[in-house]
Length: 177
Image (cartoon, rainbow, N blue to C red):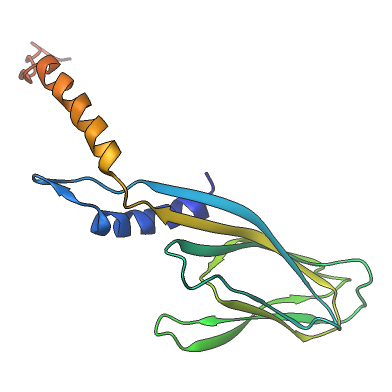
């Protein structure tokens, strides 16, 4: 699993613990499923911006993990500045340039799973492109339907109780060198 996906699951596992029901003194986390889909768009002189958004009715957590920006066939020898417009932690719109691509010195840039929360707008701030943006759309769903799983876990724990042995103290070893 990629480091970005692991980070997304780590953050979401905290959320799933908050949503999960308690059984006695223990909390059982809700089941988490993660789907990943290829994402790509192209910015050019004709299409200067692209907005990635998801349906608001969805209860899943969506993450757009960018992997690469690159100039494609037909690019001119000019600076192509790509800007990302997203929301900050306090829900204010913020625009940040993420790449300055030039055919002769930097035709591509690896973003190493740069993660953004939708909605996200990509703008070709300067240059005529074409610039290809690639990544993954990750959807993490936390299931609230745990009734069947809880029943099967209870059946398993009933059988385990009979087989558990008491924990014995470790034996001391005589003279160590």
